[in-house]
Amino acid sequence: LAKTTQPISMDSYEGQEVNITCSHNNIATNDYITWYQQFPSQGPRFIIQGYKTKVTNEVASLFIPADRKSSTLSLPRVSLSDTAVYYCLVGETYNFNKFYFGSGTKLNVKP
Amino acid sequence: DSGVTQTPKHLITATGQRVTLRCSPRSGDLSVYWYQQSLDQGLQFLIQYYNGEERAKGNILERFSAQQFPDLHSELNLSSLELGDSALYFCASSVASAGELFFGEGSRLTVL
Image (cartoon, rainbow over all chains, first blue to last red; front, side):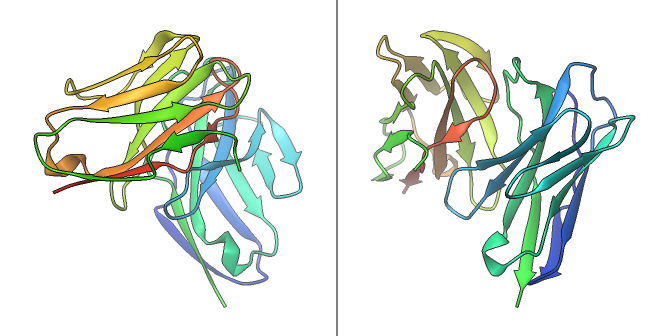
């Protein structure tokens, strides 16, 4: 299972774009990269998943370089409600057997 | 609403006691996962079941056990409770043995 490393915390201001980077040097060929968001006292919620290059949905974008040893979650124009913990997970899409979440990145959006 | 139901939402008990947490997965989901989250800590994976069978085990204590029933609901049993077992316990489900996880709202256990 590929280990991931994320910053412990980040600060931002409303309206800014936020980029959270996750390092996963030991990512395997079959591994996908998935990001979850967790608000206090709530269960995590799926944000986005990708394998390579760029994936975009209505919430975020995920950028994955060619070597796939890192990935960047991009949140456009954050608001106060985006204050949460963001987790990066790496594993085979159909073999995320242990779904280890790690410590995540605590994003604090200020007014 | 994720479609995953956990009961009870809150539970207060004493050290040495035993409790059971219940999880009903989303309709159609065969896989259930249990996580423990202590105050200001990350999510600790405990155990996963797939269609009634244990699929993966994480950092689950011997005092804890779980099972998934034929109707696919799952129960997490915590016994000989200690103060350090106080935490939020989350259940998640997914269609297969992986893929997007859908989390319940959690059961908050307080051991006094």
